[in-house]
Amino acid sequence: MINKFLYLVTEGIRALWRTRLPMVGSTLTIALTLVIFGGAYIALSNFDRATRRLQTQYRIDVFFDPLLTNQEAFQVYQRLKDVEGIASTEFISKERAADIFEREFGEDVMEVLGTNPLNTGAIVLVARGYRTVRRINRIADEITRIPSVDDVAYRGELVRLLERYLQFAVYSGLGFGVVTLLGAIFLVSNTIKLSIYAKREAINILHLLGATRKFIRFPFMVEGTLQGLLGSALAVGIVVGLLDVANYILEQFVLYRIIRPPYLVTGLVIMGIMLGSIGSSRGIRKFLTPRALKAAT
Amino acid sequence: MIQFRDVTLIYPRGPGVFDIDFYVDIGELVFLVGPSGAGKSTILKLIYMDLMPQSGEVEVNGFLTHRTRRRYVPYLRRTLGLVFQDFRLLPDRNAFDNVALPLHIVGLARHEIRERVYSALEDVGLGERTHHYPRELSGGEQQRVAIARAIAKNPAIILADEPTGNLDAATSLEILDLLTFLAEENGSTVIVATHDYTLTSRKKGRLIEINEGRLLD
Ligand SMILES: Nc1ncnc2c1ncn2[C@@H]1O[C@H](COP(=O)(O)OP(=O)(O)OP(=O)(O)O)[C@@H](O)[C@H]1O
Ligand SMILES: [Mg+2]
Image (cartoon, rainbow over all chains, first blue to last red):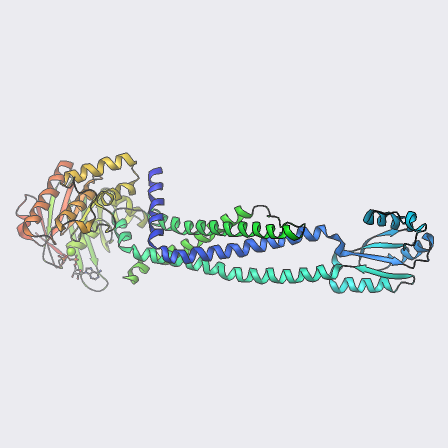
């Protein structure tokens, strides 16, 4: 039994070698498909992680009139709660502002200036359903209209825009990926078809010698699956290599590393094998039939 | 054991075979003779169930045509050794691999395959040619490889369709001798289809004559 299995696997490899030229095309297409999907996966999971870290994009810093005392400021702060689309608020008293200042700049304002000129204010987090550029703008405008609110600051806009561009890039990339995916399946089934036609005499002989359909199909399945495996090996090499290069370059400039999301390699290999085996079973279903073989002669 | 019971098969376009009724016992040597187009190949195809009868039935080694589904036909064929006029060897495999093929299909172990292939090639006198490809062998030698392939699995029945059709007279006799000798040694039933009556006179086997799709008695 094990010998039969090894024999059929060897047959598949031989067949693959015989159709090596079209095989290169299908393997490269599989690799391209996997690189696109792998790239999209890396981009999305990195962006997800980055935005989760940069909570500030949904944060609006509100500064009150500097002449307000803490108590007066708190009155103004209460009015923030009436604004729609706010998840939480935090009151910043003059003392809290001094603390933040010290944490960020390492200086105690009281010591430097002898007085505390910092504004009172608030930190507002935008609720989940309101995290779009338009809505955050509207919320910021509404807050600005509250009397004694001096200024608002938020960085949501840039990040949000970036996210939009990235999403557009990723989704159009994936759209292209679907096209290459279908192309990959087609090309694999095409190599299988060529392989079947090249071997139609042998298939005939196998039937006469008492080979079952399974025995005859198996090498073609191996052939297609190997193309998937080769394609995924290539894709893993490219994706992991590019990731390393990108990180090496990033390291020189910023403190950000692109992470390799979990199951990237496993996912690519599984997807490659699936593309290969779907392609070969399509080829077998369409071309390893008595009618198709007869039509080819 | 082969039994035809009133078998008729008519091709969609053209003739076929009609009311065929005969029995071949275990170990028998049978010549199926008749002119070209008489229906000899058709009868052999009915035996290895490449064709199924439209009426009547064929029984081969316990397999009945009307009860044998397509997917079980391979298991019938494993009990048969087939030899053809055009040899039907795989051109890209050497003699060894060609003879090994039906043994891989059956799923024998590697060492067993080696043993059987070498002894079969030895039996047909090609012990020195195991690694030659079909194109490197003469027609007679190719047919010997085909015979080795047929006998390597110890088939109950050997079916040969014009096995000497592509060979000269001397080689034809050699091949026929070889086929019948090995089959006898093996206890296999042998059916040789041929239009060459001179060949049939060389061996004492039963004659089944056919003409225009009907048996003559
Ligand atoms: N697939 C087919 N479709 C239609 N007619 C066929 C088919 N195969 C064979 N025939 C016809 O059936 C008849 C018997 O054919 P068969 O091949 O059995 O003859 P044969 O005795 O083997 O002849 P030969 O000695 O030339 O090989 C012939 O008239 C042939 O033309
Ligand atoms: Mg014939």
